[in-house]
Structures are given as structure tokens and as C-alpha cells.
Amino acid sequence: MKKIVMKKIAMKKAIFSGLVLISLAATSVNAEPRQGKHLRAGANLQGEFTRQVQQKPTANGIVRNTVTTNAQGETATRDMTLTRDKEAGTRTRTVEGTNFAGGSYSGQAVTQKTDDGYSRDASFTNAQGKTVSKSTDVVVDKEAGSVTKNVSVTRPNGEVTTTTKVTTKSRTGSEPAGASE
Image (cartoon, rainbow, N blue to C red; front, side, top):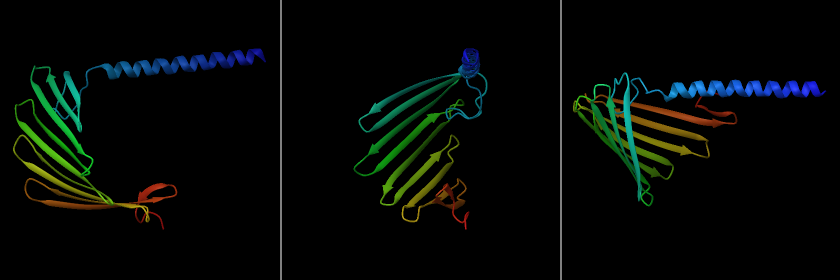
């Protein structure tokens, strides 16, 4: 009996040691400079880069300043301000910055709490001066167990795209309306 208990303890230690090694290997991979395209302070960012982020709380939100420097010494900036007005039920997020080529971009999103959900109006202007606007209205019907999301996007060429998504909650979780009969 004692041998079986000792083997179980030894096996648990071996499994634990293996998990620690895997965790350390994954951490060391993640510790390397990030590479890739999915970065706000510079689309198409590839290779090594450094990023400095400063975030400060304010009386009613936060201010975050980000400076990214690529391997060539070029910098891109992103300044974001988030402001909440609890009495009015609004949240305003303002973003502006520059890309590595020196072009400027800006955007703003205002979210308003409603009696049955929220609405959000947002616009973004890229470094070429092209603006995209997006309007979102979300209605939560607690009695029916559904959420309806209406989104309208206006592209720089004036084209408007509108989508509606209804999600209902069932006993097994959430699923698109009409998925169960």
C-alpha cells in the first residue's frame, strides 16, 4: 500500500514538473518582442519594436498614452481618453494619434445607456482623411430573453450597411433566434 501511495506522489510531482516546464517555455516565448500586424499604433508593424504605455486615472475615467518605436527608430503614437458621466449614463472614448509615416488619425465613440439597453455612435478618420461612422442600438428584452442589436455603418464612399442580430437565451445558453424550434 505504501508503494502505491509513493508512486502516486512521484507521478503527481512529475506531472507538476512537466506543467511547470511547459508554462515556463510558453512564458519565455511570450516575453520576446511582439511581432505582427494586429497593433493599433501602427498597422503592418513587423519585426522588433518597443512600446511605452502610460495610463492615469482621472476623476471620471482614464487617460492612456502609447508610444511605439520600430526597429528603424520611427515612432507611432496613440492617445486615448475615456470619460464616464454616471448621471447622464454616457461613456465617451476619444482616440487620436500618428502612424509611423507621420499621418494622423482620430476617432470618437459615445455610448448612451437607455432604459432597455444602450446606443453607441462612433466615427473614425484615418490618416488619408477618410471617415467611417457606425451607429449601434442594442435592446435587451428580459421577459423574452432576447437581445436585438442593430448596426449601421457608413463607409467613406457614402455606402451604408445595416445589420440586425437577435440573440435569444435558452436553458442551454445563448443562440441565434430561430435556431431552436
